[in-house]
Length: 172
Image (cartoon, rainbow, N blue to C red; front, side, top):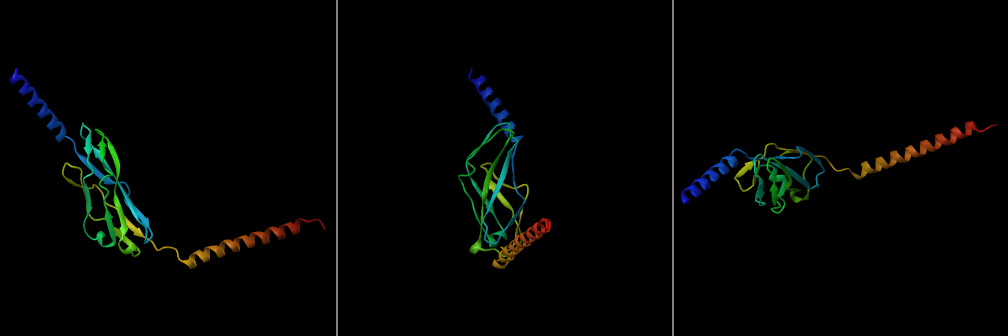
């Protein structure tokens, strides 16, 4: 009896480990292109896919960036964001982290994400893709003034046109 129970237990353990080893967790960034102003904070979202035949519980482990992007953006990881379960053969979106401009401002230009890593509790994994950040200059006061003048001029021209067209239609 004990021998049969031991054989059954070993068989279940082998079946469970082979099922577990046939799947994997993979993750990718949801957005590959960001266009922001120099002082804008960026929320980076990602999705994890579970190809295991069993649900995987994630405990909110750790995420990281390394390399050149750290000189321009401070990465903040929220360990409580990813708490939960990824369904068997399913997906789950989560906030990978927040990028805040170092010193409150980033020079206009194009920036590329560095290798990003996430530990789901099954070992550290890199993302399946990367993203870029295009930083565009913030509108200046002169640009706002120019837009305001254009709108005002358009209104003046349209009023003038309406007045002259009404005068031509009046019976004499």
